[in-house]
Length: 490
Ligand code: GLN
Image 1 (tube, helix red, strand yellow):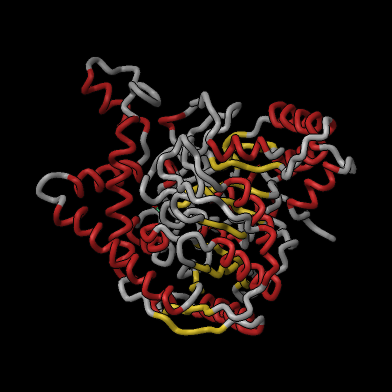
Image 2 (cartoon, helix red, strand yellow; image 1 turned 180 degrees about the vertical axis):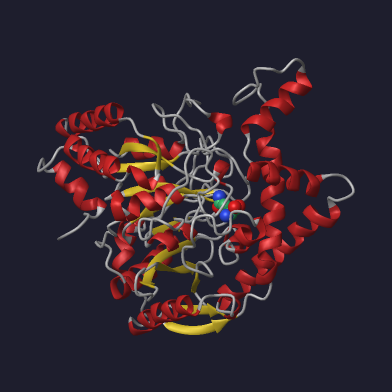
């Protein structure tokens, strides 16, 4: 096999002694250095990662059965990993060292994975381009003058450029799926409650999920199986046992009914993207699935509803960054009021402040009924749309983004333009259902080929079906071993 190996092959090579975990980690740390201009990582610590890798080698030598033996995983910098800072790409948390691992990181480490570093994001995961990072804008390895999507843009860019074989992202309104689509990688947003959020810095608590970002569908399944399950430290995780998905990734789609929602194929979506996703549909049909048109009539309300619910929850979650509980403290504060306002004014970025103001407004007395309460009612209509569709079909196939990756700076001065880019991803979080993005083609411009991602949505707990369908699309439409040369950064 040429090109980057599947995670299973990396783990097999470490378990068999063909390579050490230290060899594998060194190879990726070297690539991260060569790809530094992409701005994919906020923290890398070679000595720390190599020490983790050496500990894995010792566990392998002792005969421990490690499903992810020596697999390096990059972690989005809003997820705690002991040994690394968690900044959320915010000045507010500059230098913050978490005293504990997120449950997802604890599970990865227990399975033999090694933390490769912390990846760039939009500040507190608020954004769709990774330009809202307070540290450095991240670039798309397919065209370095373009954004990699967001907010998990660093994780997506790292995986696309093969600076990491896999990464963790978080998805509140599309932050795993949209950057996956824009970088030609695979991203899974699990069912709400499938994966622990303990140690994920909260943004929108009724929406947030952690999930894998990988080069291949089988890799996403493998990580999803490690990450999933009930966590006593997160009351929102489900007690429902997790049925492993990886053994079924190759089971195919014969007899599955797959819906194409009219509202996701409208004129607002680039014609090349529509055509590419339709060809993914034909690949599913050729593999024995039955395609049907379906309707999700409340889709036009998804964006306003998402931006009310998400900002309302954010305004409450971000109240903890007050210069006392968490985060930096303004040095010139003289009393409690100037401590709060001084610290928040100085260390939170523009977009984060905008969200806090919007959310506080939506929740304030006199406006609560007109905004927050109404958004919750529309949220249940969006969920009812999916419930109705899933009585007719097993899964839904649709585009992930209305356009391919745009240029850095193109939307940064117009927040509404940026919000509208989430039109095809937000409803999934509002409904709590799982979503998988699989690359299905590229745009055809002469000088720049940009990836296109097909999005599969299914009822709660249908990750296994999504991954099966995703594997069919991948086999027919994509070469997961292709690594873009990312310009001078390579
Ligand atoms: N782009 C969306 C937002 O800005 C989604 C972010 C996310 O999923 N974390 O809120």
